Length: 121
Image 1 (cartoon, rainbow, N blue to C red):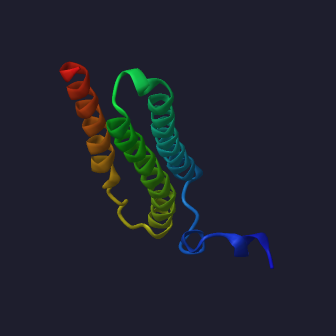
Image 2 (image 1 turned 90 degrees about the horizontal axis):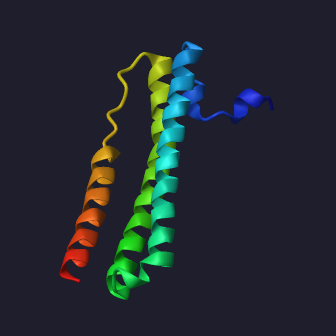
Image 3 (image 1 turned 120 degrees about the vertical axis):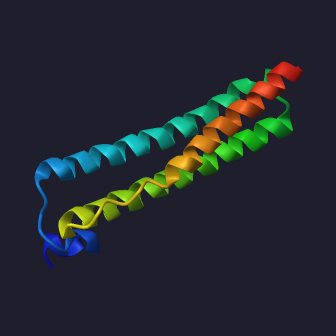
């Protein structure tokens, strides 16, 4: 068994693309991974320091929403990296980053909830 046998199926089809495109795809993956880590950091910060700002129920909902969102973004980052690599290798169109709407909704929703809680308080 060789090292090439351990690659995902997307890396076994088509031809190797220009390395610049593969590296750009990798940088995009890392950007999505940083976004997921940022959501985890926001959840940790809210749980650790948000006790004076929001009540326990709202804080728990926000923290869980941020953590679930981070997990979804992390999974999306990996699957998108693979699908873009497959598209690059076979000459297909690149997939649309549909998860962007979820990320925008998550951040806007958390900001609105925090804004309402701070104003009502």
